[in-house]
Image (cartoon, rainbow, N blue to C red):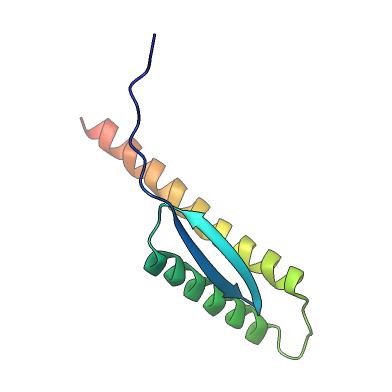
Length: 92
């Protein structure tokens, strides 16, 4: 049995620069959206560097600390969303 074709968005190829290193991102998201993500990441990197003062953190250390911050934010949003869904289900 054949399955219906799923129409996919065309893929965009965007070259970005984070901490001086270039990466090519390929996906359906717009270049503007990808660049917004890069700005957000660069802002978080700058904040981590500032918070650590004179400490010289490697790119890997910075990336891990930023990843930890972003994961924390994502998990808190996920928990809040789940709690809201539970409240909605209880109210029905």
